[in-house]
Length: 470
Image (cartoon, rainbow, N blue to C red; front, top):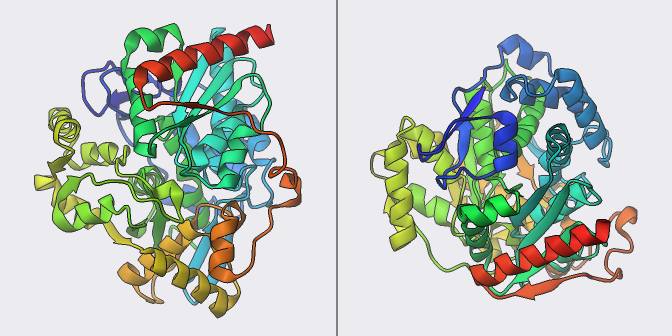
């Protein structure tokens, strides 16, 4: 299977090349030339299987023979053996026809672990096969950075440099990035927003001389393998609830559009999904786009759900490419308009977007009310991101009992102890295995929101790290 860029000016690549490249050299994002399909009987056969087995069935068709099923299964079993629940992504019923899909049982208590733990093993496998090293640069609004650092820490073939917005992640999120002492791990605070961090990462990838000199690779959801890894839990949840003989809707807290695009991919692969609902906080660029037909950036507002404090949803480009009939010239024009004027009109793409997705935004008061309400109703505690999904489910789907509603819970409440204590009066405890997190010494540097300064710093860090391992 080959992969093509959404902007149409980069050569097609195979799975492992896309894995190691991250962003296409024309600035676009890679998607498969065709969508693999899972037959109804194959979907039915996923029910009751271990999560590692489900991951193999879902992901292997994207690999085009680059990795054998046996090799992938070994990696998946190792990756998901580190999770704190045997089901890896268990479902919890919180209403007559409403379930929460818990995606926070991984090492860093966030949904990013599901894809990242497997991605690290696949990437190490590909690099070892080629006798190569890589420098991973990534931007995080809170959870991706910790998940990447935990997945790759100690790797002999990968240096990791994660940019995060100074003062705009929770203390727990920050410490998951800054307390590891491994020589190949580097957490860098940027004086700016997540969108600034993401723009810096894209600029590094688009500086081809710098990119080649440092063998850059990415693990943000710009990397196709991350999306493929997230498709797994849609199939796992659906099979557990009766797919393919039962349709269901998914409500997804999302800022970068990656997690909900994985649901769109699952639908292209044959999963019967009734509605895909975007749940947003007050940084509501996606709900506004659905309502107005114009994708228009505004200033980022800090909220209690920092992983969604975003105004540039990178994976939206992948969706627009699909909705346009894979019209790369149209996508190039729209992305150029965004870069120049911070907005573009969907035009003819507005109708498919409204058909494929619902959307709703939650205010800070809405989030607090949803957390308290669900706790009062059934004693179940959700974090602020998942609370946005509760708000969106009520707004878009209502309490319809006919079709199951699956709300993706993207983070453990203990990652946001200050916010949770303010809302509920009680501070949720971290799991025992993370007991020393809040007292461990931090290793952190701060840089200006400037591409020259950041590139210089990345090269200094990775050079020093290489010397430290020598």
